[in-house]
Length: 339
Image (cartoon, rainbow, N blue to C red; front, side, top):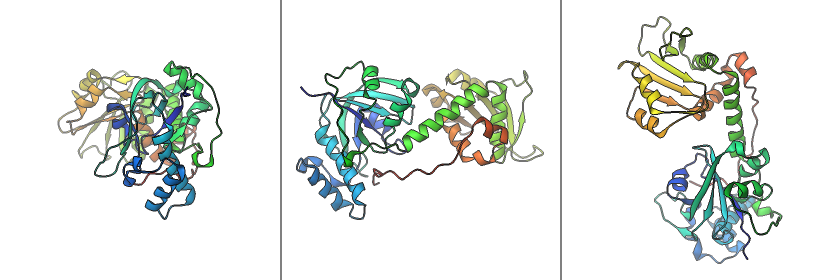
């Protein structure tokens, strides 16, 4: 009887394959330049030789890692196996079951042509997993086996593997922490600190300081008199030159809907700019409302973290103390796919 395996998979450094994964119910990996992998003999050596023939200048370890992932995707992943995908778009961990055999779908730019059909069973916030499980799902590889913390993922999916067997990782399939893990951990830390320590009006002050680091002059509305406009920002000190930027802020971690965004936009003049900033997220309807409006921009928690990281060195010292961060250097992942 086949033991149900649990695979982890990523959708690219910038989540390029996320729509393919979640909208089309296909998991995929790259290296499509090789073509249909069914043409190769079902041996690791054959896959290594083929990868080496396409990327002759790469180091041997990179070639081994890439070939191993391709081999596993085609020959080791079986129907009925579970797959866990940590999305950088919705920041949920999606767990599904493999329902399709390997297939090759040619595309003009060779992007994610090696595919399998999957049925997504459940998605959960990252907070429902232990730190160890998050560490393991943040592997530097695009495709890898999850073993040490597999029980957590099986439990989430309502699946109990018939047989627990820990198989040592071979040298060509090492699971090492990648930027996925560190990026998501940092993002969650920053947003948690903001949600806990800057609720309400203190968040306005924080946003105003971020804008200051970007060269804007800001005026914060007095408590109780903002009428939906928390901050007014401009580039010139005398507030004479357009445009005026009207800003609303929300320090809650929930989802901002279309009614809130449209009510705010009603207070933005035709010759003004509107900026809605939240620690949480925006609903699909809110994003759709804002999409055609050239003078309205929505910044959710993920985009806010990017602004914070880009301007962290210029932040006021009190906010650096609130969000203590240190620069680190991370080795470049050996599984970096070729464009």
